[in-house]
Length: 436
Image (cartoon, rainbow, N blue to C red; front, side, top):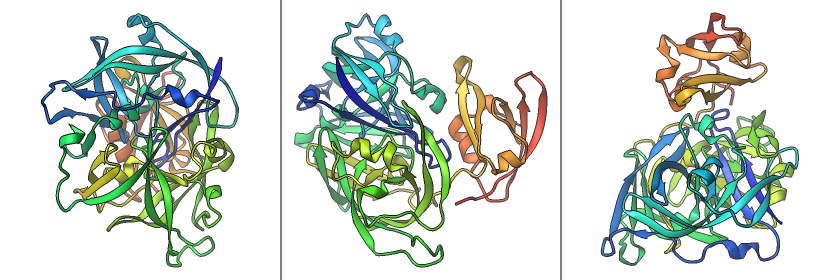
């Protein structure tokens, strides 16, 4: 039996509305299990490209695929994962998969609680216009991540960097569209910013300039920009995560919040929320970027042997402000701002942590309330169910839409209808407050 380090971190860019997932193989020879070369190909041999739609929920890119001719199944598309992962163990039975080598999974968090995983080979994966004839996956023995409850829509697993190694992948966030370009025939668009990517163990890293805010005076100007190596992470819903122990020049900003950033396989991920003065990506600058600072012992120290040059990761909350091309074959990232480019980065203003449950994932459960938050002041408690916001039934809203309402505007009043665990209905008035 071999050990696999699966570091799963929910990092709150919007209070529990973000996911960062990093996969690293530990132990001699395990890196060899990563599939070399392109795994996917265009379904039509002479095609130059294939376009497919994606759904975005809580800043996660979700695509539909068939496995061994069956499905549709749904997968989070994640550059931060080197080996694709099936998180729904029921698929092993429904697809009659042969489970191979057993591995042990340990995750980020406060404890080391191993979880079993198995390798399966020769799995045919089909997306519109794209096919992987024979692909290796890892299957978790239990759905410890509950990605479906987190996103509010069914997610069966995570499609990792094997997809990106095969194409120049254009992502059009406002269209909800991916375009997979055949690398040998791809011509990049003119006047887009091109940044070099460094590829290592199936993952891509980009250098960004990060101007920190001072550690002692919140109103002082931002410091000089630090060139940092960041994991390019489409599976992270936050904008930016920095590990301050990765570089002695890095520090927490003066204005920061102590927070439970989320939950990994091994427990709660703790750390801080704050901001940096700016993130520079080539000629483009994103100001006042909301940033997660996870506690070093739970994240960076577990990754540093595999990713020694990594100081953090750049997530989809920042990336979605651009139309982008992630071009692994030519080791470059192409960027052009879209209509979201100038939107401010906002944190959740309610203090509610929500999870979808029930038939069709249409029930919205309150699984946590931040002490001292507007939700706590309104008397809202964990295990209550959110039924309506301002007369809008919660069952008709996605978790993404509810999250937007909960960070809409400082001082805005929201009228909630709640159901207690004993079935009693009640109302509460929530006054949103910007905390960071």
